[in-house]
Length: 136
Ligand code: SF4
Ligand code: SF4
Image (tube, rainbow, N blue to C red; front, side, top):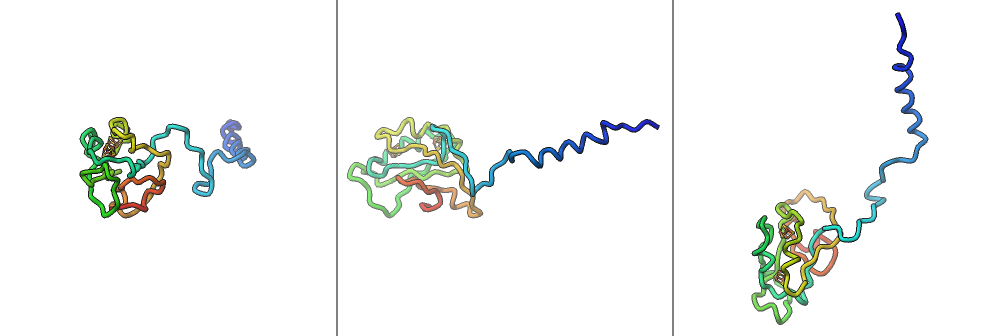
């Protein structure tokens, strides 16, 4: 009976990978640079948001609700409302940022968020960079 030498030896070639540089990174200790223009979570400059609800109207996924949190509004925000994003619905199309008249709503490049509480995916963007801090 002939022995398939190649078949026996080829799995051993995997040993060579032990001496190669790892192809993965030790996330979250090491993080990759996020490319410029990457669509992450929303930020909203509350000093310029006018509460017009254009962002809510344009969102085809119904991912935006206008809410009335107990915060200080700028004088031009006559409705007293600001958008809250449901990240269970958002597809990061960025239409809401395109239609924002004062350009207050933007997408940051922060794009990772893990939480076991579904309420923490309802996010009221402010002009800072930490999702999970501002949940109404
Ligand atoms: S974020 Fe922009 S579009 Fe949305 S309510 Fe504020 S000003 Fe209007
Ligand atoms: S990025 Fe698109 S889906 Fe997400 S909230 Fe804005 S309009 Fe809606």
